[in-house]
Figure (cartoon, rainbow, N blue to C red):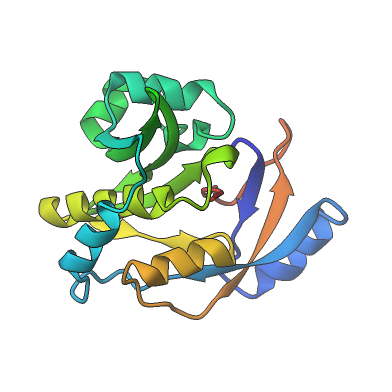
Length: 198
């Protein structure tokens, strides 16, 4: 993310090292992972949420215009932040955006891609939250991934994201400890991950 670095220790020994090296500069948090398994996904349920948007909103696949809109604003930049050029996103990324009066106000996109899957990023502009847009965009993205045989991986940054994942049919796994540090030029992350906001 542009706003913070996410440190994810893979072994117990790394916890004390992170806490010692980043004393006073990082916060311990819980992450909420979900099973990387689409066999139990209910497509009818996903179609239902994909169609639940209010009057005046439209949802469309990310194109060049939505890619550039997302990159221009702080709230939406992480939807495409790992793809420095439109051509990169067009070849490897996938996403859906909710539009209001022609402007992107919510989206679900591939934060990163890997062989056979993506990591989902979801963001909604603050004045358009709690209107079902995140669920609709995420459902559209998940359905598109299922059609392509791609795993739409979900690793929630907070409980609201975890609740949305469960609503859309994901099976929760035990939470794990991670560390969040504000992003500075001198920071060196063990790994980076997405930030979800609704």
